[in-house]
Amino acid sequence: GAGVSQSPSNKVTEKGKDVELRCDPISGHTALYWYRQSLGQGLEFLIYFQGNSAPDKSGLPSDRFSAERTGGSVSTLTIQRTQQEDSAVYLCASSQQGANQPQHFGDGTRLSIL
Amino acid sequence: GENVEQHPSTLSVQEGDSAVIKCTYSDSASNYFPWYKQELGKGPQLIIDIRSNVGEKKDQRIAVTLNKTAKHFSLHITETQPEDSAVYFCAASDRNTGFQKLVFGTGTRLLVSP
Image 1: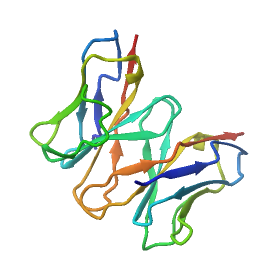
Image 2: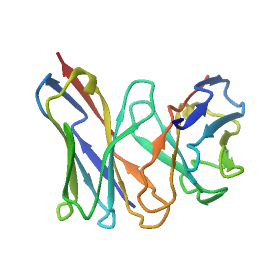
Image 3: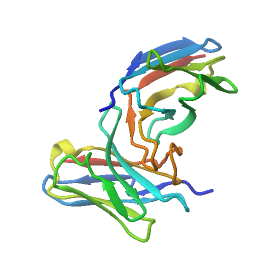
Image 4: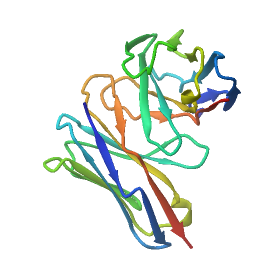
């Protein structure tokens, strides 16, 4: 079946521009997560959605980062006024509702800020 | 909060040998421990997970062990093959609710030489 789909796969933009990253979770998965992976590093939690609501935004690095989810499905992560330190791979994962349900990841968006 | 440490950072083995990757965690409330394999340019893929009510779990050539008292868990790969070469991440989660915030280790780059 279809897995988690992320677009674009690569994004190069100039410092100061806004970018929007998209995540299509696995059908039926109500939980959706965003992580950031810097070069050679582990994954850093950003935000979690249960349905359309985001109970935990504690991982967002600054107020330039925001995310939304509509219809309990597609989610977008927006970074405003991008900085070079925002360069990373942004990964999305989804899971079924319930304790300790496995998270399934997409292949990420590789963001490069010039 | 939870902190996960992973060792070694790199591991080179000959085809057919066994490989062991070790992780420690800090939060005794953690109760779910997945392992992910990440190939170049791809998202992490769940390969095995273990819950805190189990001490060991096997799936073909892969096994995971958990020592709750010592707060460490390990991934064991037997009869390694070149296609096992990848970066492996351990993670821990400390929530019993529907929200599973994973804290990841920094990864182990495994190289299996033919």
